[in-house]
Each structure stands twice: as structure tokens, then as C-alpha cells.
Length: 334
Ligand code: 1CP
Image (cartoon, rainbow, N blue to C red; front, top):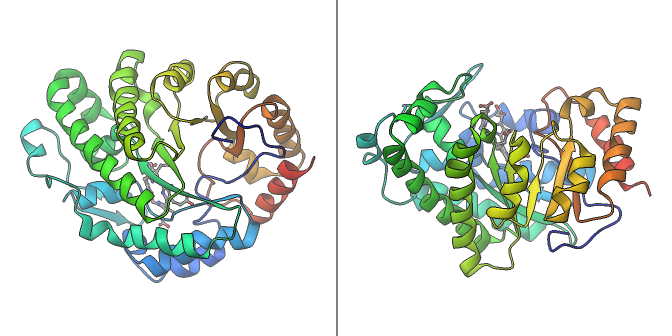
């Protein structure tokens, strides 16, 4: 499919398919306080990765980890506080970049690669294993804001007032993301997804500089050694810029958020690249006839070209698992 083939029915997996909506995940989650300790325990991460595969039979597994393991490995310690989310000591100027480790600390990330090998060994045939990382821009937002943000004041203002200095941080992230993704491929990841969750807060020229160019560089470097590994990019909220992203980053597929119409995806984007998406996670949460109609609309618009069924963003924690089973039936129903 990511090589341009049209598959009927389309393969399906869901962003955040492992996690808080599954009781079997919550059982394991309660055994640790810092969420990252799950990511750094390869036995637990393997088990969590496989839970949704066993329960639903998705066509792909995504390794259970997080985009924030990267700043953690660069020496910017990440804490997950309950009720708040990720907390980091922020980096807000060029001279603080030197405090980060030179290259990505392999020791810390070793369990992530071990979980990939373990999952690869236990997945049945026909189930693809997806490795992932955050895109440099999105990871930078957490590093500069010191966690999740609403206004993105610090990161936007730094990028606007001192693009050269901010560019140093992005450069560091391009290099370490490339290493992190390459290690995942060496461990057994068969597909890569790059999450740019905060692409949508940039102007078109900023989008070009901070999303398209860094991702293009990561893709170019990975393709030198691994030209056959397909890469999916997810520039969430890119709107009118999705098309340019597909043309200029070199990715094999573009994951599209739910603000974009499936008709446009089919008529425009799918002519240039494989597309993935884009059911609104709230529709999955509600389920029933609304979901039936929406899935049918998405399938009609996209089934005549390379297409992977997914959500337009991650599964919401309160989603009833039975709605996920129903969704898979609908997608696979000819
Ligand atoms: O307490 C918990 O159980 C933590 C919840 C959780 C989970 C299940 C977090 C915290 N991360 C994850 C796993 C995760 N994160 C996966 C692998 C599992 C899967 O898909 O099944 C992936 C791919 C991610 C990616 C991720 N992490 C993104 C990009 C995708 C997206 O949702 O936009 C981002 C932005 C993060 C950061 C993050 N991780 C967790 C939190 C609470 C946050 C902050 C989110 C925010 O700022 O809104």
C-alpha cells in the first residue's frame, strides 16, 4: 500500500491503539508512577504493544513508546505528572542547547529497541510493525515550553526572533531523530511514522522551514541506508499545506487529520502519495449510525488508490473498545 498499491479492503490500525481506553492497559499502567518507566521496560512495552493486536486483529502494531523519550535521552529529563502530563526543564535560548548530550544516549533507549525486537518475534505474518518518532518541530515545542502548551509562546517567539539559534535546536533534533529511527529499523521496525502533532500552529513559510525541511532531511538520511522502509508523515493541522508536504518531504504516505475532507484527499493528495486517515476520534467514541455513515464516506472517497484506514488523531481515553471492533468490521466489510 505504501508502495502505491491499492488494497481492498484497506489495512487498518489506529493511532494510540494501545493505551488508556483498554482495561488490560490500565492494569499494567497502575504498576508504575512515571509513564516513561513503561516505555523503558521492554517486557511491559512488548505486552502493551501486543494487547490491541490480540483483542482486535489490527493490520499493524505500533511500538509502545513516546515521542518524548528523545529529549529524555538527550539529557532533558521528562517527568509525567498525573493530571498535568509531561514536565521538562525548558530550554529557551541558544546557549542552553550545549547542555544537551552530543548524540542520543543509546543506553537509555536500548529498551525501546529491545521491545521492537521482541514484538517483531511474536507478531504473526501479515501484521506490520511500525516504529516512530516525533518530528523535530513537535518535539521542540515540548522542550521549549517545558511540557504541553496552549499558546506556544516561547517556542514560536524564539523561532521568530532568533531563527538561527532555534535552528540549532532543530538541527540537533534532526540528527538524533535520524539515529533513533535508524536504530528502530535495525531492531525490526518495518514502517516508520513521524508525528508532527503541532504542525498546525505555523504559518506557511514557518511550516516550510520548521516542518517540511527537517522532516525531508530525516527522510533523506534514513533512505540512504534503508530505501525500502516506507515512511509516513503526520503533519497534523497542515490544512492547505498537506499537498506541498507530500511533494517535498519524500515520505511514502501522509497521515491526514479529520479537518480535511476525504473527497479532497482522494482527488488531490492521493494522486501524489499513499494516504492514511482520517476518522474523527470523537466519532469512534460515539459510534453507531454516525460512524457507519462516516466510514462509508471515507472508504468511497479513498478506496480507489493507496489508502490505510486510521483516525484523524489518537484514540480518546473514554472510547468503548466495542466501538473499535465495530469500526474494524465496517472497514473490512466489502
Ligand atoms: O498515563 C498514561 O497512560 C499516558 C498516556 C500516554 C500514552 C498511552 C502517553 C503520554 N503516551 C502514550 C503512548 C504513545 N504516545 C504512543 C504509542 C502507543 C500507540 O499509539 O498505541 C505514541 C505513538 C505516542 C505519540 C505521542 N506522544 C504524540 C504524537 C501523537 C499525538 O497524539 O499527537 C505526542 C504529542 C506525545 C506526547 C505525550 N505523551 C503522553 C502525553 C500526555 C503527551 C502530551 C500530549 C499533549 O501535549 O497534548
